[in-house]
Length: 440
Image (cartoon, rainbow, N blue to C red; front, side, top):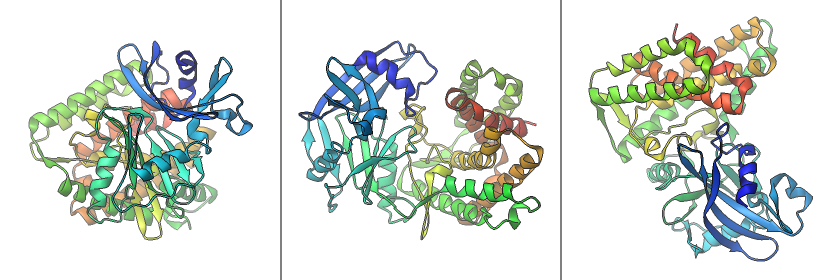
């Protein structure tokens, strides 16, 4: 199995080490959940990447004959047995619901649900098509179970933060219903599936398409103008930040912490330069922005934050916006994802997302000067609307902290440059263009 996985892993969207050499794959845990044909095993693998090792979670199915509907999930053949990604097998995944309903301990795994939650177990599971760093299985119209593909020891921030926020009674998040864990880590989390929800990214992209289709109208004149939604999203973001500061640790950073934050940004830039040489033209401007952050006085508020905030992490439902996926950036170590940070890091992430929504079509189709102008107009309008909504709810405008916000946005753009170089090279121009504009 390990040799098969070595070839299979780099082809998976959720595999976080694309572009890096895999030195070896070791199975560190192998638990049988379903016997027979088909069978299902819960497997944890350690992927040796040379300088470090990453742990990933798999549901491995075994069949003598694989039906056509599962051919896309094939890992490979071991003797007369076909191994495949059983997350895609609805004949097997309902077992996870059964175990969670019972609150069972099975083969070293713990299946848990919140008190008072009754879980249906006869639902068909379908993997969501928009698979990214994790795999989400939707069961009927009732549940969505997120398998955390990259596993780190400790309580996953998504479960920790979502539970803490749900306990406040806020409607700005989707509450957890249950989870799966072992002795050292959170492995999965289940929440209600919002059938009427629209993803923020899809809504924003539709607005951009409407603008591009109009030859002589400005962004505020198009029927699909998104600025009102952006402002409301800003207000909800500020509400969630206030709640997080109240229910989880928060404090004011001193000068030394500002300098340490800037040092981390410099180090991430150093690593990014080794991967994407095109960044070299902007290195001086980036370092200048980071140095300005290092020079800030004491008093910057820091707290728990979302950590990977963008339009895909916001759902529009009938009663407003809901924020999801509080796991943080999966590529960062868990210690960084749970560290106290400025909430402006989340603001910067959303500002970057507006740039992406405005420009990703240009990146795929080739830039046109007229469309580039319209993309800039749309992005600026929605960035300003988001900040205005945030200011209205928080009592302070994030644009007033220009040095901190600029450094945070540039740091996020550097992260994006590395991600795009490894996963979507045709989109690399989006973060590079943003860096060029911000460092002028």
